[in-house]
Length: 394
Ligand code: LMR
Image (cartoon, rainbow, N blue to C red):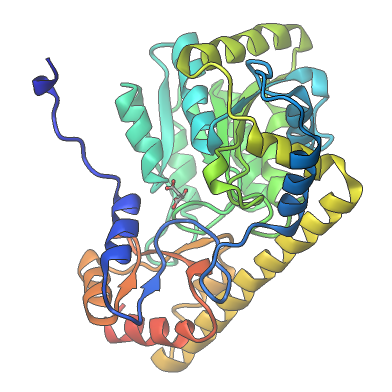
């Protein structure tokens, strides 16, 4: 039977991770997968997480199942972190998932269940795995313009023009902050214009927020999501704890279904529980428990927020250094967008050939669309990258 299976395309980001590992050159720079790295290239366990882990080891007395939606304390803490006071807790159904990707997948499943004909509008470009999962689930996608290749900022006029085509029953997938792969983000007036348009068209927003705290800060990064949640009749929000808690391999995420009619919360919660049960039963608990412990304990939370700020500021510093170095080497301001972008990524706007040249000549690994992970740099590798970019003729 299985001989009928076809080869599946390898994930480009994960393939790059492998190619980097196999490159024998001593001086190489990994700007591929979205994982935070410190100046020595390590991905540290955050202090508060390590402390919570020790406490958990001391105090945990059972590994029995939690609930289908995970521990309610985790949901409560994460709903508050992402949504603040924008909506009442009773308006939100929430279920823990295996990572942010799991939340995205469960969200798409809920959409398909509610409306098998729903089309999902996705930014061009978007995180490639959004497209891959949607294709696998046979959900129709429609791309909307998002990135202006000239300015390397948001093509907002193009975005709004393309979103004019959404219909009631369609879903518009938005990035909550730190757009992946471009690093170009909506301003608050732009968020408002998108919300107004979706309200007018009767389409449903779904927001993927995987980098809260990496852009302009924990609160500022959630502003767009909060505005959407408090303005529309219903929306889905997929949140990841992988990056901002640094617990990538623990697979910790949360899917939230927000509705302005609290009477529907029970139905939504039942649907999320059901979908978890069908797809994997109980969600992983370890990472979720650590996040809950950190968010519930004042001292741990303060230390976590402080470390997250250190991470954010390190990335901002690297952005400034790279933009300045490129300005110096190229004698032009055409790379100033790097300092304006936010989050872990920036799309440089290099051609696939230029990306290949940088990999072959300088052992610099970035995604084929020229997405770089800023956190893969340190103050010594910034000048190497800047020179490679200018040499490649970007
Ligand atoms: C990325 O975009 O590099 C990250 O979200 C990791 C992944 O799973 O692709």
